[in-house]
Length: 494
Image (cartoon, rainbow, N blue to C red):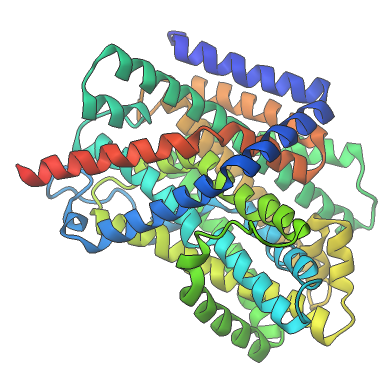
């Protein structure tokens, strides 16, 4: 395996960030928070404009005649079945975040908005904001980046890299090679740091769940044991073929998540939850497009800070993950049409997210508005404990908590496996089946970065580090989409 300049530079940068986080975790977190805060103040409008622009671009492509263009030669067939395809893209794209934030995020928004609106209205607004953060905009970011990579990879015969659209659209000039090299390098760093944050989040949640199940206090030893188990868990499938490793684990994780959601829906206040889901769904469809242009500029200072810390941070988070998720989705989507691709990538996961947060968030609101509000108190103290406190209110709490722990574990493993695969692809100039050794090297780097994020400790600071790694993508992604439209127009004119 030849050590290319790209590989060595990317490994050096990633290792330096990991070392900084291990030696001075609070310095890394505080520095990232300061830089990201300044960027949100000056460029928040552009972040929302970029996310909304990607959603409108996806709508246009799906509905236009260009939606019939196939991602590959005419007559090519998809490699994976549609259910496995959706499970893999969903597990790679969000996975553990749904388990972590299912009830925690709506309750957090409820606490903030409750100071400015009556409780019932604050609950509706909190659910809408959660839908905004996890819905169409998030998956449009993933979908459009994935579409760009898939189109140039399978339709134009280019490697599955962020540099491919620029070099294909504008030729092999010195400036296009330099720009493409920078795009690929920034993508590698964003993928590595973003996945490390997800790994840390998974460790925190699994640790909290295990501590509650066995009646012990969370400790450094338990954290280390969970982290070591996850590292072993993703090292094994990194050695396997993508279909063997990812498809099976993703299907198991999704089955556990769906089973958990249905259990809570059936054994919880079903009518209340269905009312929340239907009402929230209607409110979201009615207001999602204009809300994508909101910046909270003229509201109270605490609301502006809340908006920046959640919605802006999420949009940057999805941009940070877009090279990884986009390349991975592209890798598993050969043979699908643009319309089929965008419908599957945007509609199916968004619908599931709306139902998921309607169930978990609805249960949180039911507790706050109809019972004693104990979940809100738990949430205020520890976000990663909220899901388990919710499950403790239902029968078979040990079983459901165990299923949540296993699902979180598998979601993290599948995300790291996907990321290791994609990082190895970038380091080998787009090889769709990179060497096992290189995948394992990147798995080790992700583990080191994950340890750094765990040492940072505070989820808010971890999110800031992820956002810092992705700031450049608010400028890069629009360039990639322009390259896509330029190429599609030329193909349509021929």
